[in-house]
Amino acid sequence: MILTKVHVVNGRKLVAICDEELIGKKFEENDLQLDLTGSFYKGEQVNEEELKKLLENAYVVNFAGKESVEFGIKNSFIKKENVLTVSGVPHAQAFVME
Image 1 (spheres, rainbow, N blue to C red):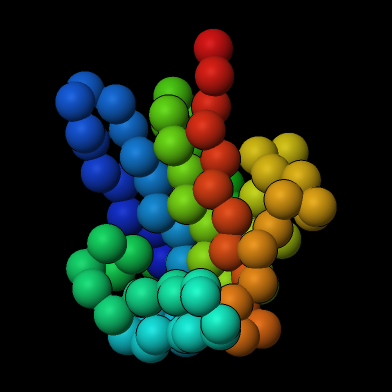
Image 2 (cartoon, one colour):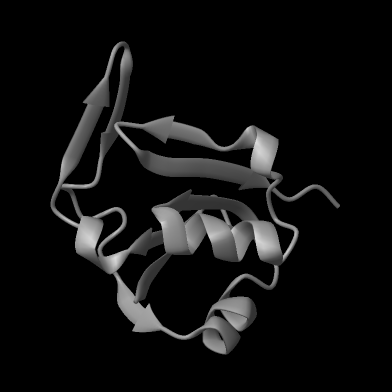
C-alpha cells in the first residue's frame, strides 16, 4: 500500500509518496541516506486513482519504495534511469515544470 502526504511550501504543493512498509526506517549506502523515520512521508493510505488526483498541480513529488517508484514511472512522472537506489530501496524526485 502507498502512503501519501501533501505539503504546501510557499504556496506550492509538494507530495511525498512512500511504500507503507518502509515508514520508520532508515537506509544507508556509501554516502547516500534515505531517512523515512520522520513525519515527512507518514501520510494517508491511498489507491492509484486517489493518488493521481493528489498529484494534480503538484510542483515537487518525492517517491520512496518499489511500489511508489513504479507508480511514478508508469504515470510518466519519473524515468527509470533517474531512479536512485539506497540499500535496495528505490527513490526518485520529480519537479513539475509548467
